[in-house]
Length: 193
Image (cartoon, rainbow, N blue to C red):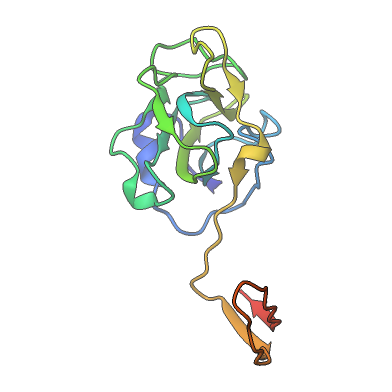
């Protein structure tokens, strides 16, 4: 969360690339656990979506106040679309997916089961109740009637490995292999980030 922002779409872009939030929250599903997170803040939620089935998914967003939802064509933030695929221009109640016509991407996205897709959701809050929900309609379901919050089992937290190290503490011992037989090597390592 980035404190000091007011509601309005102009506030959404202001913190999109900011580096250090005033406070953090790890989502266990595609929505904030409470719809009372404070006032005058902007929030950026990022992670990876891993769909359980191959097919066309439809993504939706609900929020109080405004929000934008972006989903990449792969696991890279560099491939996020320029424009949001779904957005809230005023505010909605929690899990109110159809208040505005822009809340659901009715074009759909063809996703592959097990593949990772980077997402970013931006939300800004002025005052009163607040929160954000990211929902989907899975293959074979109708986005006009079925939208569910993305479950935590389909979300992965991205890990920044820029300052991470792995040290091999025990090298594998040489073994002689025989064609058609299994050879086992063991190695020990320590890591830090």
